[in-house]
Image 1: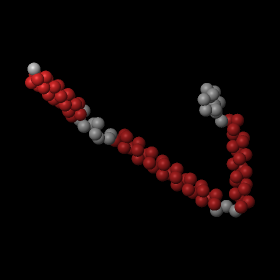
Image 2: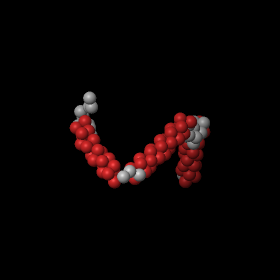
Image 3: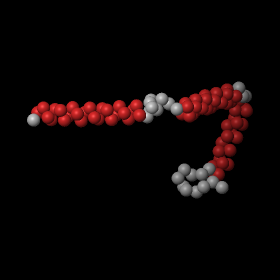
Image 4: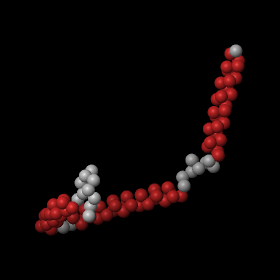
Length: 99
């Protein structure tokens, strides 16, 4: 009785291993290789991130090169613009669409 249970378990394990092996090899190793589209998307995302970082660096550098009066005026203008645009902003979960 012990030998038949042991043979049954070995057979079951071997069948499971063969099924998993066929699953991976049947897909043509597509699971292991990244496709061209995802590689291109990753490159684009990295390029966008780098461009955003460069833009932010240039913007901060521009701000730092301004005189004290110009900095104050830029700060005041930024606050006024934020105040003016506050009514135009859509609330996060209000369900009201922008017009």
